[in-house]
Length: 157
Length: 157
Length: 157
Image (cartoon, rainbow over all chains, first blue to last red; front, side, top):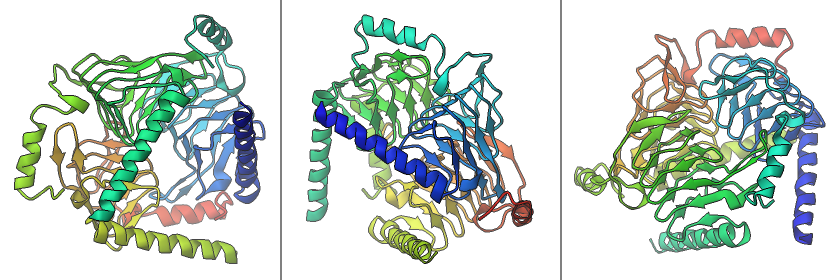
């Protein structure tokens, strides 16, 4: 397990370095409390247009775009606070994802997402409103669900 | 061609090593006869929940998820036997893909897929039922099709 | 900035080498004026079936497929001239994208795209017809849009 802890330390160091690069070198606006997966992709053609709010989570394979070559657009794309941007999803240039919202895995988000809303699909549509999340877009009740699953032996994490 | 054969040998060795890692180190359940592309991605946050059946094929860029951070879910995601999981598709946590079924390229599978069924789209919907496949989700008649294409000179493989 | 210019020179050299590999080693048909992102993926199982026309742009993460294992298909997949194939999109085997057309980011293109057409979604559907593009699928008026955005200070490229 010592090895795993060292790997975890390494991973976190790389994530810190990467956030430094995103904000200080590229000029993005990623909040220090946001978590951006090492396999997520933030637009480097128009980095100043990338905004990720506090306590938001950008999952593995997600892409946040801030430019559109075909239309000559260079826009601000904004992920609010406490959002979860799901694996392999795509946030198109100029889109604003409201606070406390969730973008489902694989979704392609073409228009603004209201606060406290789950969207999914391609193009993404609203599948749930008035949701109640805490940090990193985690739905209230998620902790209890995990505890129940652990007790049942399904989750051995 | 000697070089190509050596590369192929190398590729297969890496795939064997990777299956060993998936099952013995991570604790997944990938059948020894299953083929998992080196560019496919099986969930490492809840590896015990990943089940890939015999003679199934997980194509390049496909993702099999077994956890959902937002809901605190850690579930079993099951790909049956003789399935083909297409390039860049996404199988969501808890989904069961029945035996002898095909998931189209780019599909995002949000609910169970019945046996002998083709699904595609995001969210994935059924586009064909009662299909007839052999190992690795290959439709009966595919060999004849390939032979015909080779005879016509289109496929120079 | 000297460093950045050197990096840009390096990137272009790699892209040239890669085009050489695509056409001369793999046997694809990528026009010398086409731009293929280093993170795009052209089918290497049936490379002879990949055709990319002049002044077309294959964006980051896009995939052009020319074979279908499940049906035994090895087909010609054709991207015409002056097309823009958006980030993370997927062109399925046998599809023909007409000249001067745009495939939206994240689209999964399952059937032919007429010339001068924008498609998007999964499965992709037509969202605009009779469009007017110049090289690389850039819509006429895009330059003016970019100039306006630069004047407003939004784009600091």
